[in-house]
Image 1 (cartoon, helix red, strand yellow):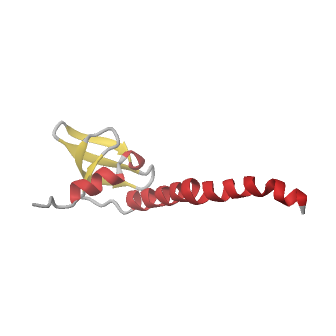
Image 2 (image 1 turned 90 degrees about the vertical axis):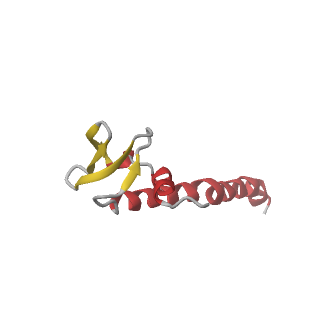
Image 3 (image 1 turned 45 degrees about the horizontal axis):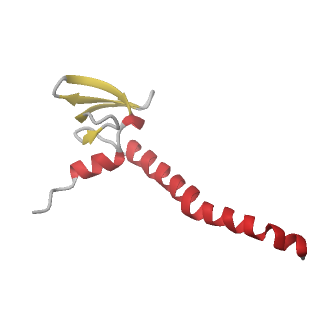
Amino acid sequence: MGDIGQFLPMILIFVVAYFFMIRPQMKRQKDEKRFASELKKGDRVVTKSGMYGKVVDLNDKDYSCVLETMAGKIKFDRSAISMEMSKKLSTPAKK
């Protein structure tokens, strides 16, 4: 019984870390992957580097997309698209 009491604080720390750090990170990664796979032509998006554009082509072979920007068309990896910034862009502004 004494051995278990010695490891109980470490076990509790691991459980708390799992529910407050590891699990939310895994959920966020899953949501980002789903967002990238659901991109479609015509979607207005923002890359993680801050470039705004409209999706004009999607390539499933190399998991890339082509964005039309004011500077022209640029090819990006879908993982470079920011889920949070793109969702803010697509939601209408409240008055």
